[in-house]
Length: 151
Image (cartoon, rainbow, N blue to C red; front, side, top):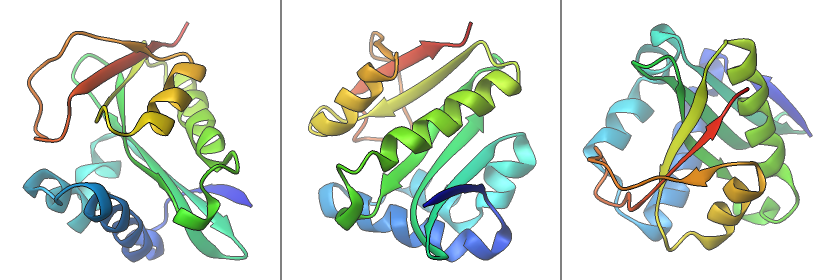
């Protein structure tokens, strides 16, 4: 298993991995489509990063850091293939995000999720994220808001 930085050749896998998990639990929303159709333009060109988890050259997970106006980064579009959930791959992807955020000089990482995704919320807590009060979101499914300061 290796975590690598996104290359344009990963675009289809990034989209497929995210559509699979979102579609299983929720509805793929307009904001999802906007980002998944153009990850280079919507994430990387705006100062963000995408990490891909590869197993024998096949994409099996991903996570994105989207630059925020306050200098922080939103952790978004994070998922692991169904067959590899519970293996620690999500933790590896989140650690890549934390390390990148620090390297970029970000004051914090932020994320939005849904209260029905208990394993994900458990991971975020274990990785140092704390709950925030609710805010307006581009996603109807978002009802949990968290951040992790990056000292």
